[in-house]
Image (cartoon, rainbow over all chains, first blue to last red; front, side, top):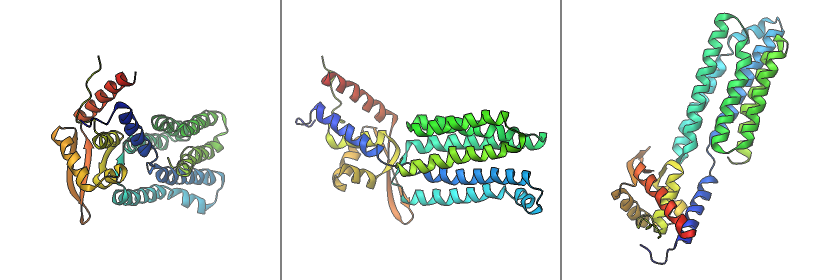
Length: 192
Length: 93
Protein backbone atom coordinates (compact mmCIF):
# COMPACT_ATOMS: atom_id res chain seq x y z
CA UNK A 1 0.00 0.00 0.00
CA UNK A 2 1.28 3.46 -0.90
CA UNK A 3 1.68 5.06 2.54
CA UNK A 4 1.51 8.63 1.19
CA UNK A 5 -1.70 7.89 -0.70
CA UNK A 6 -4.55 8.82 1.65
CA UNK A 7 -8.37 8.47 1.35
CA UNK A 8 -8.73 12.09 0.16
CA UNK A 9 -6.31 11.38 -2.69
CA UNK A 10 -8.29 8.23 -3.50
CA UNK A 11 -11.53 10.22 -3.77
CA UNK A 12 -9.81 12.72 -6.06
CA UNK A 13 -8.59 9.86 -8.26
CA UNK A 14 -12.10 8.42 -8.51
CA UNK A 15 -13.64 11.86 -9.20
CA UNK A 16 -11.07 12.59 -11.89
CA UNK A 17 -11.76 9.25 -13.59
CA UNK A 18 -15.51 9.84 -13.54
CA UNK A 19 -15.00 13.33 -15.05
CA UNK A 20 -12.82 11.86 -17.80
CA UNK A 21 -15.45 9.28 -18.72
CA UNK A 22 -18.42 11.65 -18.43
CA UNK A 23 -16.79 14.06 -20.88
CA UNK A 24 -16.66 11.38 -23.59
CA UNK A 25 -19.50 11.29 -26.13
CA UNK A 26 -21.33 8.00 -26.71
CA UNK A 27 -21.52 8.32 -30.51
CA UNK A 28 -25.30 7.81 -30.37
CA UNK A 29 -26.03 11.30 -31.77
CA UNK A 30 -25.32 10.15 -35.34
CA UNK A 31 -27.85 7.31 -35.12
CA UNK A 32 -30.51 9.57 -33.53
CA UNK A 33 -30.09 12.12 -36.34
CA UNK A 34 -29.97 9.49 -39.10
CA UNK A 35 -33.09 7.64 -37.96
CA UNK A 36 -34.85 10.93 -37.17
CA UNK A 37 -34.40 11.92 -40.83
CA UNK A 38 -35.35 8.46 -42.12
CA UNK A 39 -38.50 8.18 -40.02
CA UNK A 40 -39.67 11.76 -40.52
CA UNK A 41 -39.10 11.41 -44.29
CA UNK A 42 -41.00 8.11 -44.32
CA UNK A 43 -44.04 9.53 -42.53
CA UNK A 44 -43.87 12.79 -44.52
CA UNK A 45 -44.05 10.73 -47.73
CA UNK A 46 -47.10 8.86 -46.38
CA UNK A 47 -48.73 12.19 -45.56
CA UNK A 48 -48.04 13.79 -48.95
CA UNK A 49 -49.13 10.65 -50.82
CA UNK A 50 -52.40 10.59 -48.86
CA UNK A 51 -53.02 14.26 -49.67
CA UNK A 52 -52.42 14.04 -53.40
CA UNK A 53 -53.67 11.72 -56.10
CA UNK A 54 -50.38 12.06 -57.93
CA UNK A 55 -49.09 8.84 -59.47
CA UNK A 56 -45.53 9.95 -58.75
CA UNK A 57 -46.17 10.29 -55.01
CA UNK A 58 -47.99 6.96 -54.96
CA UNK A 59 -44.95 5.39 -56.55
CA UNK A 60 -42.65 7.09 -54.02
CA UNK A 61 -44.93 5.86 -51.22
CA UNK A 62 -44.75 2.28 -52.54
CA UNK A 63 -40.98 2.39 -52.41
CA UNK A 64 -40.66 4.42 -49.20
CA UNK A 65 -39.64 1.25 -47.31
CA UNK A 66 -36.32 1.60 -49.14
CA UNK A 67 -35.53 4.42 -46.70
CA UNK A 68 -35.19 1.79 -43.97
CA UNK A 69 -32.75 -0.18 -46.12
CA UNK A 70 -30.70 3.01 -46.61
CA UNK A 71 -30.85 3.64 -42.84
CA UNK A 72 -29.73 0.09 -42.12
CA UNK A 73 -26.77 0.33 -44.52
CA UNK A 74 -25.75 3.78 -43.19
CA UNK A 75 -25.97 2.50 -39.59
CA UNK A 76 -23.89 -0.56 -40.47
CA UNK A 77 -21.19 1.55 -42.15
CA UNK A 78 -21.06 3.97 -39.19
CA UNK A 79 -20.92 1.06 -36.73
CA UNK A 80 -17.95 -0.38 -38.62
CA UNK A 81 -16.24 3.04 -38.52
CA UNK A 82 -16.94 3.37 -34.79
CA UNK A 83 -15.40 -0.05 -34.15
CA UNK A 84 -12.25 1.04 -35.94
CA UNK A 85 -11.87 4.35 -34.12
CA UNK A 86 -13.42 3.94 -30.65
CA UNK A 87 -11.05 2.90 -27.89
CA UNK A 88 -13.73 1.99 -25.38
CA UNK A 89 -17.28 0.70 -25.23
CA UNK A 90 -19.52 3.07 -23.33
CA UNK A 91 -22.03 1.32 -21.08
CA UNK A 92 -24.77 3.46 -22.64
CA UNK A 93 -24.05 1.97 -26.08
CA UNK A 94 -25.69 -1.24 -24.92
CA UNK A 95 -28.65 0.67 -23.45
CA UNK A 96 -29.25 2.50 -26.73
CA UNK A 97 -28.80 -0.68 -28.76
CA UNK A 98 -31.39 -2.74 -26.87
CA UNK A 99 -33.82 0.17 -26.43
CA UNK A 100 -33.90 0.93 -30.14
CA UNK A 101 -33.97 -2.71 -31.23
CA UNK A 102 -37.11 -3.21 -29.11
CA UNK A 103 -38.51 0.08 -30.47
CA UNK A 104 -37.88 -1.05 -34.07
CA UNK A 105 -39.55 -4.43 -33.44
CA UNK A 106 -42.58 -2.73 -31.86
CA UNK A 107 -42.95 -0.27 -34.75
CA UNK A 108 -42.60 -3.09 -37.29
CA UNK A 109 -45.30 -5.18 -35.56
CA UNK A 110 -47.68 -2.21 -35.34
CA UNK A 111 -46.97 -1.30 -38.97
CA UNK A 112 -47.78 -4.87 -40.00
CA UNK A 113 -50.96 -4.90 -37.90
CA UNK A 114 -52.10 -1.57 -39.38
CA UNK A 115 -51.45 -2.83 -42.92
CA UNK A 116 -53.38 -6.06 -42.32
CA UNK A 117 -56.31 -4.34 -40.59
CA UNK A 118 -56.14 -1.34 -42.90
CA UNK A 119 -56.24 1.22 -40.08
CA UNK A 120 -54.12 4.19 -38.97
CA UNK A 121 -53.12 2.81 -35.57
CA UNK A 122 -49.43 2.85 -36.55
CA UNK A 123 -49.46 6.66 -36.89
CA UNK A 124 -51.04 7.08 -33.46
CA UNK A 125 -48.80 4.65 -31.64
CA UNK A 126 -45.53 5.59 -33.32
CA UNK A 127 -45.00 8.89 -31.40
CA UNK A 128 -45.90 7.10 -28.15
CA UNK A 129 -43.36 4.31 -28.68
CA UNK A 130 -40.67 6.77 -29.76
CA UNK A 131 -41.44 9.03 -26.78
CA UNK A 132 -41.28 6.11 -24.33
CA UNK A 133 -37.95 4.95 -25.75
CA UNK A 134 -36.41 8.43 -25.64
CA UNK A 135 -37.67 9.09 -22.12
CA UNK A 136 -36.15 5.78 -20.91
CA UNK A 137 -32.77 6.23 -22.61
CA UNK A 138 -32.61 9.92 -21.63
CA UNK A 139 -33.40 9.01 -18.02
CA UNK A 140 -30.72 6.32 -17.89
CA UNK A 141 -28.17 8.64 -19.52
CA UNK A 142 -29.29 11.50 -17.23
CA UNK A 143 -29.78 13.60 -20.35
CA UNK A 144 -32.97 15.36 -19.40
CA UNK A 145 -33.47 17.32 -22.63
CA UNK A 146 -34.05 13.96 -24.28
CA UNK A 147 -36.65 13.15 -21.59
CA UNK A 148 -38.42 16.46 -22.34
CA UNK A 149 -38.43 15.75 -26.09
CA UNK A 150 -39.78 12.26 -25.35
CA UNK A 151 -42.64 13.81 -23.37
CA UNK A 152 -43.45 16.03 -26.39
CA UNK A 153 -43.58 12.88 -28.56
CA UNK A 154 -45.99 11.21 -26.13
CA UNK A 155 -48.12 14.37 -26.18
CA UNK A 156 -48.17 14.24 -30.00
CA UNK A 157 -49.53 10.71 -29.72
CA UNK A 158 -52.45 12.10 -27.73
CA UNK A 159 -52.87 14.89 -30.30
CA UNK A 160 -53.06 12.19 -32.98
CA UNK A 161 -56.13 10.73 -31.28
CA UNK A 162 -58.05 13.94 -31.89
CA UNK A 163 -56.82 15.37 -35.21
CA UNK A 164 -58.48 14.63 -38.55
CA UNK A 165 -57.32 11.33 -40.00
CA UNK A 166 -55.53 13.09 -42.90
CA UNK A 167 -53.04 14.64 -40.50
CA UNK A 168 -51.97 11.66 -38.39
CA UNK A 169 -49.02 10.82 -40.69
CA UNK A 170 -47.88 14.45 -40.53
CA UNK A 171 -47.97 14.37 -36.71
CA UNK A 172 -45.94 11.13 -36.78
CA UNK A 173 -43.37 12.83 -39.06
CA UNK A 174 -43.14 15.80 -36.65
CA UNK A 175 -42.74 13.40 -33.72
CA UNK A 176 -39.87 11.59 -35.48
CA UNK A 177 -38.18 14.90 -36.20
CA UNK A 178 -38.56 16.20 -32.65
CA UNK A 179 -37.95 12.95 -30.80
CA UNK A 180 -35.11 11.51 -32.81
CA UNK A 181 -33.47 14.14 -35.05
CA UNK A 182 -33.59 17.00 -32.52
CA UNK A 183 -32.41 14.70 -29.71
CA UNK A 184 -29.42 13.70 -31.86
CA UNK A 185 -28.76 17.29 -32.89
CA UNK A 186 -28.65 18.50 -29.28
CA UNK A 187 -26.60 15.47 -28.20
CA UNK A 188 -24.02 16.27 -30.87
CA UNK A 189 -23.92 19.97 -29.94
CA UNK A 190 -23.51 19.22 -26.25
CA UNK A 191 -21.06 16.38 -26.82
CA UNK A 192 -23.30 13.83 -25.07
CA UNK B 1 -13.26 1.25 13.77
CA UNK B 2 -12.33 1.92 10.14
CA UNK B 3 -12.77 -0.83 7.58
CA UNK B 4 -9.44 -1.76 6.00
CA UNK B 5 -8.90 -0.41 2.49
CA UNK B 6 -8.23 -3.03 -0.17
CA UNK B 7 -4.44 -2.73 -0.64
CA UNK B 8 -4.76 -3.72 -4.28
CA UNK B 9 -7.04 -0.80 -5.01
CA UNK B 10 -5.39 1.68 -2.66
CA UNK B 11 -2.85 2.74 -5.24
CA UNK B 12 -3.31 5.77 -7.47
CA UNK B 13 -2.83 4.05 -10.80
CA UNK B 14 -4.72 0.84 -10.02
CA UNK B 15 -7.60 2.84 -8.54
CA UNK B 16 -7.70 5.08 -11.62
CA UNK B 17 -7.79 1.99 -13.88
CA UNK B 18 -10.62 0.37 -11.92
CA UNK B 19 -12.57 3.67 -11.68
CA UNK B 20 -12.32 4.15 -15.45
CA UNK B 21 -13.29 0.54 -16.16
CA UNK B 22 -16.24 0.76 -13.76
CA UNK B 23 -17.86 3.34 -16.05
CA UNK B 24 -17.42 1.55 -19.38
CA UNK B 25 -18.22 -1.91 -20.73
CA UNK B 26 -14.62 -2.36 -21.83
CA UNK B 27 -11.64 -0.21 -22.76
CA UNK B 28 -8.55 -0.63 -24.88
CA UNK B 29 -5.06 -0.51 -23.41
CA UNK B 30 -4.23 2.71 -25.30
CA UNK B 31 -7.35 4.38 -23.90
CA UNK B 32 -6.31 3.55 -20.32
CA UNK B 33 -2.75 4.68 -21.04
CA UNK B 34 -4.00 8.01 -22.38
CA UNK B 35 -6.44 8.64 -19.54
CA UNK B 36 -4.11 7.62 -16.73
CA UNK B 37 -1.14 9.42 -18.31
CA UNK B 38 1.25 6.63 -17.44
CA UNK B 39 3.84 4.60 -19.32
CA UNK B 40 2.87 1.41 -21.17
CA UNK B 41 5.20 -0.63 -18.97
CA UNK B 42 3.78 0.62 -15.71
CA UNK B 43 0.19 0.25 -16.91
CA UNK B 44 0.90 -3.27 -18.10
CA UNK B 45 2.39 -4.17 -14.69
CA UNK B 46 -0.57 -2.79 -12.73
CA UNK B 47 -3.07 -4.46 -15.07
CA UNK B 48 -1.32 -7.78 -14.53
CA UNK B 49 -1.72 -7.38 -10.75
CA UNK B 50 -5.42 -6.61 -11.16
CA UNK B 51 -5.80 -9.57 -13.51
CA UNK B 52 -4.07 -11.93 -11.07
CA UNK B 53 -6.51 -10.82 -8.36
CA UNK B 54 -9.41 -11.53 -10.71
CA UNK B 55 -10.47 -7.88 -10.80
CA UNK B 56 -9.87 -7.34 -14.51
CA UNK B 57 -10.21 -9.50 -17.62
CA UNK B 58 -7.68 -8.86 -20.34
CA UNK B 59 -8.34 -9.98 -23.91
CA UNK B 60 -5.65 -9.90 -26.54
CA UNK B 61 -6.63 -9.83 -30.18
CA UNK B 62 -6.27 -7.80 -33.35
CA UNK B 63 -7.92 -4.70 -34.75
CA UNK B 64 -7.22 -5.03 -38.45
CA UNK B 65 -3.48 -5.71 -38.66
CA UNK B 66 -2.65 -4.23 -35.26
CA UNK B 67 -2.57 -6.00 -31.89
CA UNK B 68 -5.38 -4.99 -29.57
CA UNK B 69 -5.59 -5.38 -25.79
CA UNK B 70 -9.03 -4.93 -24.29
CA UNK B 71 -9.65 -4.66 -20.55
CA UNK B 72 -12.89 -5.27 -18.71
CA UNK B 73 -13.78 -5.08 -15.03
CA UNK B 74 -15.00 -8.42 -13.65
CA UNK B 75 -17.88 -8.84 -11.21
CA UNK B 76 -15.31 -9.52 -8.49
CA UNK B 77 -13.50 -6.31 -9.44
CA UNK B 78 -16.72 -4.30 -9.41
CA UNK B 79 -17.67 -5.69 -5.99
CA UNK B 80 -14.19 -4.89 -4.65
CA UNK B 81 -14.42 -1.34 -6.03
CA UNK B 82 -17.83 -0.81 -4.38
CA UNK B 83 -16.51 -2.17 -1.06
CA UNK B 84 -13.52 0.14 -1.37
CA UNK B 85 -15.82 3.15 -1.85
CA UNK B 86 -17.90 2.05 1.17
CA UNK B 87 -14.73 1.82 3.26
CA UNK B 88 -13.60 5.24 2.01
CA UNK B 89 -16.85 6.77 3.26
CA UNK B 90 -15.88 5.79 6.81
CA UNK B 91 -12.55 7.58 6.50
CA UNK B 92 -14.09 10.74 5.12
CA UNK B 93 -16.84 10.72 7.71
